[in-house]
Each structure stands twice: as C-alpha cells, then as structure tokens.
Length: 65
Image 1: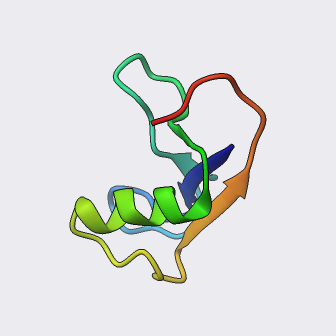
Image 2: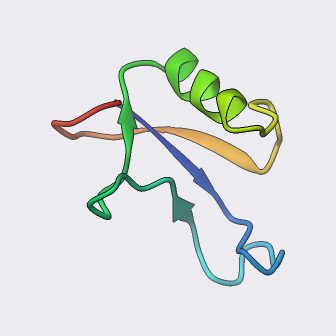
Image 3: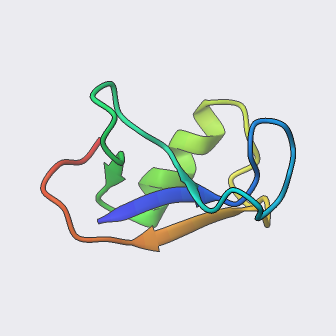
C-alpha cells in the first residue's frame, strides 16, 4: 500500500514539524494500491504529482482509496 506524505507544513515550513500524511475522513492515513493511483489522486486534487516535496511511501495497512 502507498501513502502520500510531505515535510511541508500548512505555514510553509519544511521539515520542522515532521512528516504530514494525507488522511481519510476518519483521520487514518489514506492508502492507495499503487503509486500511480496515489499520483492520480494528487493530480486530481490540483497539485503536481511529481513535486519533489511529495513522497510516496510503501506502508502496510488494510484500507485503500
């Protein structure tokens, strides 16, 4: 499963507040079957899926988008 993370906080600070993950409606990390699916989600939401501040991480989990 793939999770989307970034080190950029809402106020634009990079790295100081640790990683931030895309969460689902229940506050759990949103997981995708493939990196391609995760990149499509990012693009659909108006961001550059190849932005070097966005990471796609392999994670274990049971739910996915």
